Amino acid sequence: MEREDFLRKIELFSGVSPRNLKAIAAMCSERSFKRGDYLVRQGDEGVGMFIIVSGRVKVVKETQAGESFDIASHGPGEFIGEMSVLDGAPRSASVAAQEDTTCLVLVSWDFRAFLKSHPAVALEILPVVVRRFRETNERLVNLSRIQ
Image (cartoon, rainbow, N blue to C red):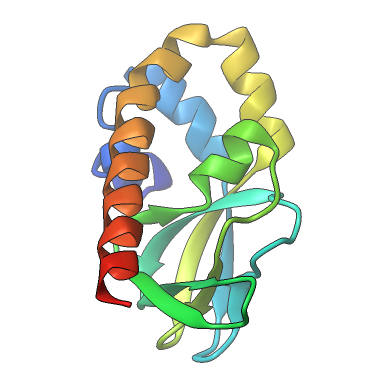
């Protein structure tokens, strides 16, 4: 499957014009992870966003007390790491491959430079990022109520 066709089916990019989507697809590289490998670790610099082509990953948040909580699980067609790519902040959680996983990787500096020169794309993806942030926040609130 062509990268552009694959990205068109990803919620984050569903509203992006074909011309801009083609440019984003050209920025992506492919990377594979074995079961148990970490794609990212909490606190590390956010150098890329990962779009899952195949496999499954889990998102784990560690508290300052050293407790770990599974926050989410993602599979093909989903993405992780969008917040660090957009704001440059350290990773807010760790992500590990639950099975052999292949991802498209969109490097932060390339994507940020593209968004600066194509601000309409930023406005098209922003609602998806905000909604995901709200969903994650709600999961964290619910976890805190359980304790």
